[in-house]
Image 1 (cartoon, helix red, strand yellow):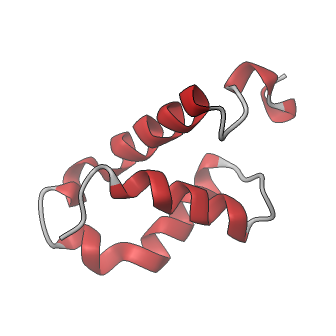
Image 2: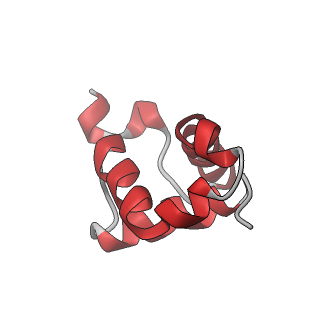
Length: 75
């Protein structure tokens, strides 16, 4: 069963699939296309959009993902 923690890996996989940089819309679509059955298995279905953003924050804290203010699209 998928958990909130799985979203970290799923966000990374979506970014890799996009060549290292992607919009939040692309990441959401990728996660849905790849993991919709897992998302539907439990309450994660109702929180995964929030959890995806939490995962991005965790990746920024770890230095795996660029800070939002340093992203060229955010300027």
